[in-house]
Image (cartoon, rainbow, N blue to C red; front, side):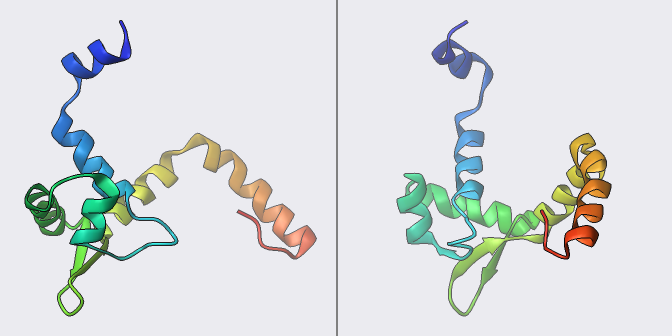
Length: 109
C-alpha cells in the first residue's frame, strides 16, 4: 500500500493538523501567537482558533491572556513523564548516564 492510499484510508486530516499545531512549538519558539501558529502550520485562523481552544480546554496548551500567546501545557508534561517512566531505552540508559555524570563531573543527557 502506498503512502497516499494509507493517508486517505487510515488517517484523519484534522488529527494531522492538530499534531502540526503542537509540533509548531520549539525550544527556540516556546510561545506563539495565533498568527504565528497559522504561518507555521498553514492552518487558517478560524480553524486554528478551534484547535487551540480545544487544546487549552484539555490542558495541552496554555494561553497567556495578557499577551494572547500560547505555550505547551501541563497535560503534555504528564504524558511525557508516562513515556519516560515506561521507555526501555531510558530505563537502561539512566544508570549509565548517572555514572558518567559522577565520573566526569559534566552534564549528560
